Length: 459
Image (cartoon, rainbow, N blue to C red):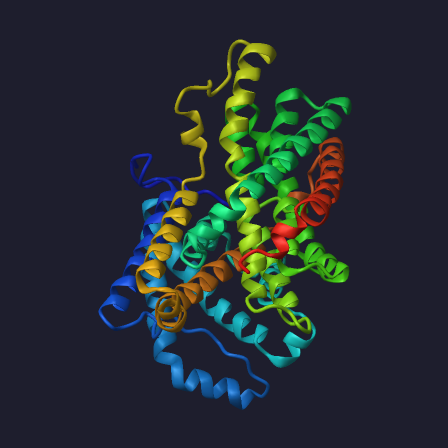
């Protein structure tokens, strides 16, 4: 979430210097490796290890005693892939290596704790445990800030989203995609309008108000940075928007899953509501995964309820709302250049602006989904269900869970409440009004208007 940037160590091309493309390359590389092993009669499942449910310490100890070589190998692979990407993005290995090693070991411990029968009984989901643990460490100041180089929230989440594509059939995306785009468009336009209008009424400068509005309407952190550049907002304005988004995103991680559970929403409906109401991909995925686990334990819950919540969230947030970054960049850069000021705007609208602002990891998500769909069709439905899912899709799903775990923990480890203390009252008031509208509108659309689509997602 709150990222501490390091100065690049070399001149990087736009391609090699983007975490989107590194997430795509690593994610699709893992999918290709899993497919290659599958077609050769092997599987990636040995490497894709994760803690299992346990009730007594002896059960947990037996699991790690029998699987520690797998954890060591998995950690080594993640270390090489992650640090290679972060090094190319400009971070020093002296910082990224210890940072990631801490992330991996802590994620194993949190994952195991979340599989404890007592934690399951009280809905203490791993994403919430990871966030709380990270926040505690970050705000106690027990870790040096240089380790933040290894806590790259957006990189881990983008990588997880690419791997998520390999667990979602493309036919499902095509079926639900139009609904997601319509619902996301309504939410994006209305939320932006509410935040921008209320901010202007409170006396917030128009460029600042535009950045604040898109931060709430689309994809918080990425949107704030992109729109601030597009309209020529001040650097400190973008920083305030990012901090505001982080604060509300963390609140919603805890509020939305339990609110959806209290309302008794089906997993898909709850995931769609979270997708319209969260303000960052990482936070939203944490909330959606937490609610999916809660919904899966409800009596008579349909099979695959946990994945259904994550799928609905992804279609709403990643496929639906995130693509609006480019649209808003085009619209607001034109408005800024022609109405607010004719000089000094950092980025004018151009023919390639939508692609330049488009979140590239979405491309990896779609490619992975298409690939797995083609494999399923070639194998046949029955064979896909018996062999392909177990040998190909399940290991990818496990690796996806690890990537998300790294991101969830990094949210807490890079969020320091002292950095959020200087938020202005007027921007916060305008954004908070947008939050209220966003949550209520998202609930209305997810339950009342499109509830049938989301409840039947994947069935």
